[in-house]
Image (cartoon, rainbow, N blue to C red; front, side):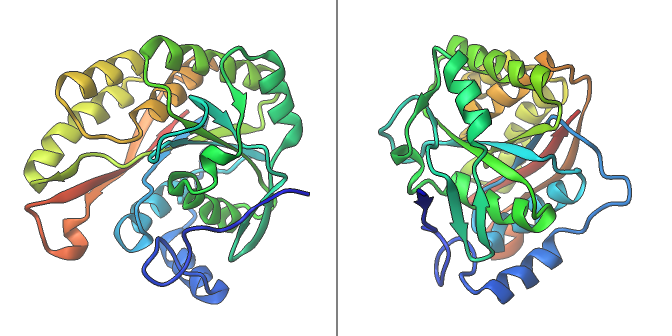
Amino acid sequence: MMFRKTAWAGVGKFYPSDKKILESELHKMVRPAEDRKKVLGLLAPHAGYVYSGACAGQGYGRVALTETVIILGVNHRGGGADLAVDGNDYWETPLGNVEVNSELRSRLLGASGLFQLDSEAGRLEHSLEVQVPFIQYASPGSRILPIVVAAYRLEDLLAAGREIAVLFKENRNLMMVASSDMSHYIAADRARELDFKAIARMLQLDAQGLYHTVRDHRISMCGVAPAVIMLGAARAAGATSADLICYTHSGEVTGDVDEVVGYASLIVY
C-alpha cells in the first residue's frame, strides 16, 4: 500500500494536526444545508483554514458529496507532469486515511493522451491536501482522485475537461472540486472588482471566457487552470447552472485591506 503523508497540518501550517480540534473547526465551518445539491463541480479556496475555511465550508455544506470526488489542484511548486494523476492508494490526514479510487484512475489514464501517473507532483501540494479533510468530514465514505494541474495552454485544459467528462458518462456518482484562491495581494476593493469579472464567467459556465478574462485582466487567480478544466468537463457532462455561494477575502480576518487574497466558493450543476 502506498500512502501520501500529511504535509500541511500543524501549528503555523494550513490546518490543525489534532483530530479533535480539526473536527471542531470543521463542525463550525461546514453547516450542511437542508437542500444540498448534487453537483458536477465545486470551486473551493485552499488557503489556511483561519482565512478561507469558512468560505470553503459554505461550499461543502451546500453540496451532496458523491462516492468519488475528483480534486483538481494547482501546481504551486513546479515540476512533474502537466496533468499529474496521483498514484497513491490512500491519503493520510488527521481524520484518518481516505482511499484513492484506483479504478477511476485506471480508466482515466487508460483512455487519456494527456493525463499521466505522477505521485511526486502532489506530494507537497497544499491545494489538494486542504480539500481532503472537508471531504472526509462531509462524506466519510467518499473516495478521491487527486490531480495536480500545471498545464496552462487553453487547448490542453479544454481537452482535459473533455476527457474527464467521459468519466461522468460511465459513472454519474462523481463530482469535481477545483481548488483555487482568487486575486492575490492587492487592495480589497480592486480584488473584488477583478474577481467578480472571473466569477461572472464561471457563473455562465464559460471556460474559455474565464481563461481569457483572467489572462487579459491579469487576475492572479492561481487555480484558473483547474477551474477551466472543471467548467469544461461539467458543461460537457450536462451542467446548465452555477451559483456563487461565498465571496470574501483575507482582510476580513487580518484587518488589512491593502493587501488581500480573495476567496470564492461556487457550485456548478
